[in-house]
Amino acid sequence: MSYRLVSVLAFLTLLGASAAHAQTVPATAPESDDNVVERLKDEGVKLRFVWANDWAASVRGGERVGATNGGGAVGGADFDTGKLFGIKGGTIRLTFARYYGHSVAADDIGVIQKIQGYWYPKRQWQLAQLSWEQQWDNHVNLMAGRMNATWQFARSTYGCRFVSAPDCPYQLTNTTGGFSGFPYVNWGARVKYEPDARYVSIGAFEINPERRNNHGLVWGFHDSTGVMVPVEVGYETSFKTDPYPRHLKIGGWYNSADFTDPELNAKGQHRALLGGAARNYAGGRYGLYVLGDQVVYKPDPNSDTRNLAVFGSLTGPLDNAETYTLQSTAGFLWTGLSATRPTDSLGFQATWFRFSRKAVGFENDTIVKNHGTGTFKRDELMTELNYSYKLTPALSLVPNLQYIVHPDILGNTVGVKKVSSNDIVVGLRVMLNLGGPGSP
Image 1 (cartoon, helix red, strand yellow):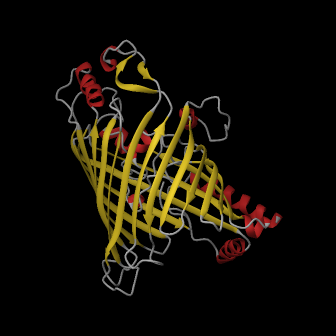
Image 2 (image 1 turned 45 degrees about the vertical axis):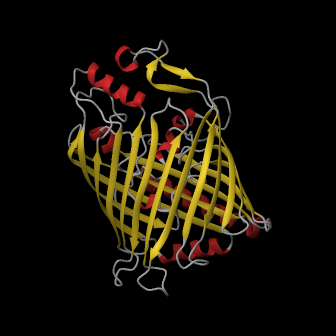
Image 3 (image 1 turned 30 degrees about the horizontal axis):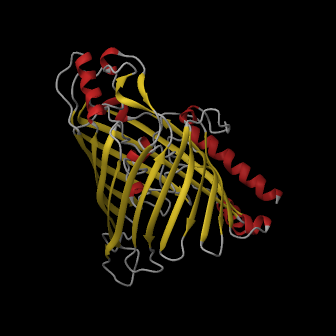
C-alpha cells in the first residue's frame, strides 16, 4: 500500500514541475516508468495526465490583430476502492491542474468566450477534483465531493474535441446557470439511475464565486451564495451496444443565488456611463437545455474506428435579466477520413449566441463613454474548423481556423472605442494525452 501512495505522490510532484514550465512537449517516459504505471493500474491506481498548448493569432478584425500563447496541464489518479480497500464499485478521483499564458480572446478580440480552450486567467495550482464515485448493481451511480457540474450535466459528447470552448463546457450554463466549471470545483453531489440506455440524473452544487480566487483548498461555506440544482434525462448508447451510437440529453436547472443586472446600477442608471455597483436581484433563476448527437456514417460497417458523427444543442434561461438569452451549437466530427489515417479527425463547429438587450445596452454604453462609434448586434456566431493529426497515439497536432461574426467586447470593456469587426483566428494546439480526459 505504501508503495502505491509514494508512487502517486511522486507522479503528482512531477506534474507540478512540468506544468509550471510546460512550453515544449514533454519527453517520452522511460520504459521502466511505463512498467510502474501498468503495475499501479493492476493494483488499483490509474494515473492520468494531459498537457495542451494553444497558440492563436487574431489576423483580421476584433479590437486589434495580435497573437498569444496559453496552455495547461491536468493530472491526477483514479483509485479503485475495490482493489485497494475491498469496497467494490467505488472510485476515488483526484485531479490537479495548472495553467499559463495569455488569451487572444481577451487581449486582442474582446469576446467573453474562450478562443484557446486550455487558457484560464488564474495561473496557479488548482485542486480540480476530489470525489468519490460509487456504482451499485441496481443501476444507481452516486458521485460526491469537490467536483464540477459541467462534467455531469449538459455535457456535449464532441464539444471538447474543439480548440475553442463555447461548448466545452456550455458557455451559457456556465455563465448564466451557475454550473461550477472545471477547474473551479465546489462541493457537489450527483445521483444517476441508468437501468438501460435510458437514464435520469439529479444533482446539487454549491455556488461560490470566490472559488476562482483560491487554490481549491478553502472548503468552508462562508463564501457560498446559493445552490444550483440540475436535472437531466437522457438516452445514450455506445459502439458496444449500437453500430451507430447516439445521445439525447434534456435537462434544466434552478439557481438560488442572487445575481446582478448586466446593464443597470443600484440606482437604475446605466452602469457603463455613470458607474456604481450593479443592481442586485434575488435568486431564483431557471433554464432548459437539449443536446443530441449520432454517428450517421461508417465507411466500413464492420469497423467502429472510422465514422462521421453530427451533433447539435439548444439552451436558454427562463428570465430576461441575463447576459445570454440563447445558445445553439451544431457541427460534425469525421474520424478517419483516410484508411491510412484512421485516428485523425476533421471537425467543424458553429455556435450561435444571442445576447440580452441589457448586455448589448451595456456594450453600446461603453462605446459611447469612450467616444467611440458603432452599435453592437445581439447575435454572435463563432465557428471553428480543425484537423487533429496524430503524431503518436498520445501526441496530437491540431491546426485550427476560427471565424467570429459580430464579436462582443464583454471579455474586455476597458478603453474600447469601436465595435469589433468580424474576426479571423488561426491557431495550433499541441496536445499530449496520457490516459486522461482530452478537454479542459
